Amino acid sequence: MLITALPVGVENVRDLPSGSFPLFTMVLADLYDPIVKWFQNHPLPPVAVFSDIFLGWTTRLANELKIPRYVFSPSGALALSVVYNLWQNMPKRNDPTDKNEVISENIGNEIESWLYLKEFLGHDRVWAVGPLLPPKKEQAMRGEFSENIGNEIESWLDQFEDSTVVYVCFGSQVVLRNNQMEMLALGLEKSGIRFLWSYKIPTEEDLLENYGMMPIWFKDRVDERGFVVKGWVPQVSILMGADQFANADLLDELKVGTRVCEGDKMVPNPDELARLVAESVGVGDVKRGERARAKELSRASLSSITKDGSSCRALNNLVNYSVNNFVVAYPQKSEL
Image 1 (cartoon, helix red, strand yellow):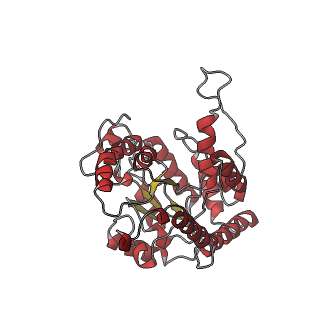
Image 2 (cartoon, one colour; image 1 turned 30 degrees about the horizontal axis):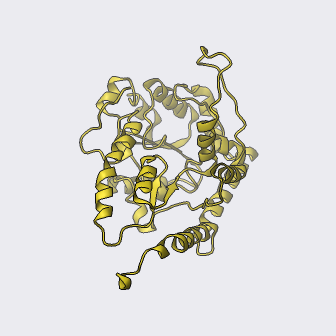
Image 3 (cartoon, rainbow, N blue to C red; image 1 turned 60 degrees about the horizontal axis):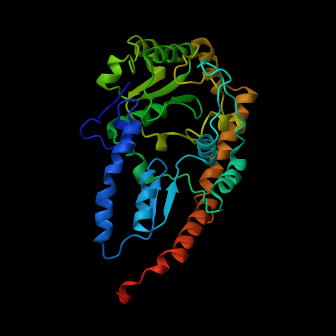
């Protein structure tokens, strides 16, 4: 799908039509000149720029303003290392005409990735912070969904024991093809398990291109064991563990997940999907071990954002580094 212009009023990636994220990042570059003018007229201009990894134009902005830029990457070290590596060492097909050829590369693990990042960047100014969770009082309102639907979901979940409901979601940007929706729905029906499925509301363009259509038979067949939400859900408050680790390779490495299929055009086998989904909430030793490891990782990640946790220490180190190297170069108000 080719997107040449953003819909009027769109200011968040979750509201974008499928395939328009690159355009969204390009449009943000229009902020360059207004930021420069604001900076030049500010009595106490900023001493550094903190910007998202997708906003590469802010490097040029920081250079013009003669201040440092810090890159913020919401993804983990593994995903970021893969991006940096591919930027310099893009693998090539043995047969350039074979678009289906599988290219396999050893991308290491999360620990090795931290070492790779520092080696790639040529310094050790890499700080690991997170998970970045909103305050508890704000968690239920994340995503701008109806408060009623949030209460309805939590009431529905309260009927069941912990770890007996599967959460199905593909993020705020992905819209599945209709054949993928069909096979996913069929797999969930055959699994017999309870599930909460949240999917992005398709745009008119999506529907015309055969994306995002929920099978008309699905809701009637799954009856009350399934809860389908057209839009976003309060996942921070309803999920018991971490959601969406860096990527499938990391899930495999940590042994907390199982691959079903991969590739944006791949259509899952409904029978295999049904078996794997049912096993994920079963009582087998393998799945019980995966759930235990997932809970252990969840506890570890949450402990990192406590007062003495690794995330808080890293953030303090970042602040101290910035203050000692950049803020002191600017006069205090009393000196102006």
